[in-house]
Structure formats: structure tokens, C-alpha cells
Image (tube, rainbow, N blue to C red; front, side, top):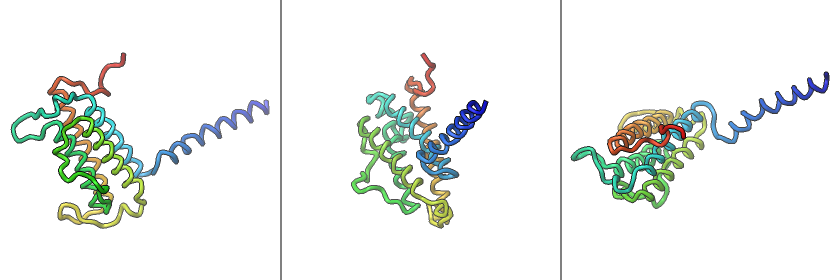
Amino acid sequence: MKRLTLSSLALVLVSSALPRAAAAQAGPSGVRGDMIAQIDDAAGKIQQLAEAIPQDKYSWRPGAGVRSVSEAFMHVAGGNYFLMSFAGVPAPAGTSENMDAITERAKVVDQLKRSFAHVRAAIAAASDADLDKPTEMFGQKTTYRNVYLTEVAHAHEHLGQLIAYARMNGITPPWSMPAR
């Protein structure tokens, strides 16, 4: 009886430690962890769309004066760098000033991956206290927290746009395809 009890206790202790160990490896917890989880969700889906849309559709636009597929993807990538600058995190050296000019699918996908990694790293490197640091964004006084929240909203806003672009071109988002 004691052996069963000790084994059960050991199992409980080990299994309760696993989520904490995984969380420690995953990065920040709390609101910064939530922000990173939201960025990861949007980034993963945007990158899947970038890979699912054929190169010949990258120049498609829903109307005159509206961003093309590649321009929409590159707007997201450029925005990732630009928004982080309001939290004191400059774009890496060598980042293109004219991201809209990048139209080749492989390069677009690469830029998306790099820019989302930049966002993840910026949020992960910030401390909880950093969230309350004052800054200015678009001429308004705000905090680093709001900069990061704006980034999350921006990524999800354009995810919706890119889902619409894909569906208008007969492309089903990969994550919403029926399981086979």
C-alpha cells in the first residue's frame, strides 16, 4: 500500500512540475507571455498563408490603389519593425527601407519570419516594469505595454485581411482545411 501511495505521490509531483518547466522554457509569463502567444498565433497563420498563396497571386490586389498580396505581407513585416521602434527597439541593421518592393514569395516569407522573431525577442526582453515605461507613438503619449498591444492588434488585423485575400483567390487557409 505504501509503495502505491509513494508512486502516486511521485507521479503527481513530476506531472505538476512539467507544466512549470515547459512554461519556463517557453518564455515570459503574465501579460508578456499572453502577448507573445497572440503574436505567435498571428505569425504562424500569416506565414502559412504566405507559403500557401502561389507566387503568381502575389501581385493580385482587390482593387486599384489597394495593397497587393505581397505588399500586404510586407506591410506586416515592416510594421513589426516600425512599431517596436516606439518601445526603443530599432530594426536590425540591414533591414530594407523599402519593404513593399520585396515581391518574391521566398523573400517575403523570410522577412515575415525575421520580423516576427524581432517582435518576440523585444517583448521577451522587456521586464514587467518596462511595460509601464512612457513613450510616444503616433504623436500620442502612451506606454510600452500599449506599443506591444498595438503590435498584436496590427498582426491580427492584417491576418484577417490576408485571409480575405486568400479566399478571394480560391485559397483555403491551411489551418482551416478539413483533417484527412
